Image (cartoon, rainbow, N blue to C red; front, side, top):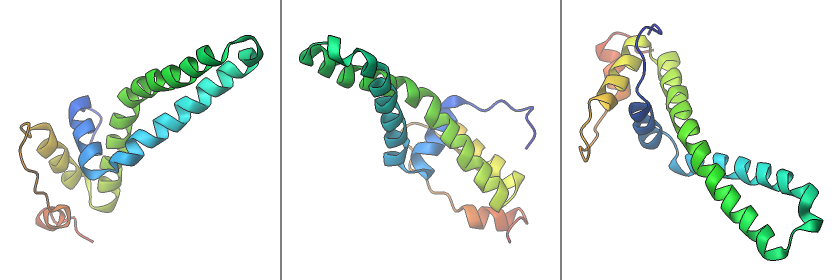
Length: 124
């Protein structure tokens, strides 16, 4: 698929949450955020009281995790689409993307990617 079609962040989010690992979608940004907050607070650790330090660790990590999720989950959706294109082909990738982009909220998803690839002649 060419880069002429702009991918929707919402569709990429749906792809990542449906076809990806929901725990992994949360765990990696949370670990990275905790590490960044820990390294940022470390030089000031001696000068900050225990309660304020706990609030910075917990609140800072939670806030940074929410911000990181906004970027990481669509990135993961693009990565999943790239893997589908690599394994099956560009038409299969486009169909999977269109399926998620046009899906209605609460709609049950039933998608046979290998069968779809065979229908497009892209099966290996």
